[in-house]
Picture 1: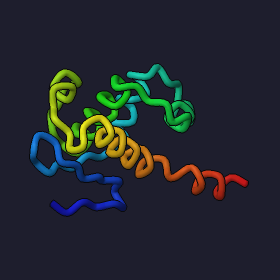
Picture 2 (picture 1 turned 135 degrees about the horizontal axis):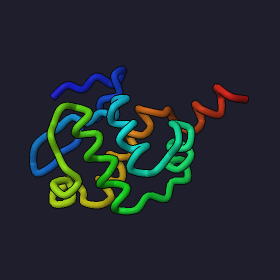
Picture 3 (picture 1 turned 180 degrees about the vertical axis):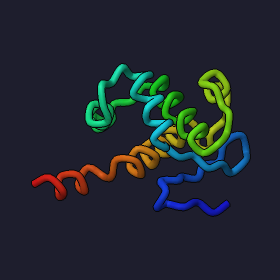
Length: 112
């Protein structure tokens, strides 16, 4: 499955199938609501700390699946098998967040 990195798409093997995830503006708005963040900067700051819980990963991955057009509740995502387990889930979440917000060094270079 081809992903479009310019649109922020990320590919992952979930339940043995290659799936596309994307943090669209709607998906980011869901995450703002889920994490009680006032804005995208607050959300980026939270994720930039690099300390995500399993619940955080479930929220990010489910928002990413929904952003790519799949209907996946957080309960469904919690039961899914992600390639490479928790480490794989963390990697996919990090790729999604980087696609949405940019890499930390990119942000620092943009705001010297």
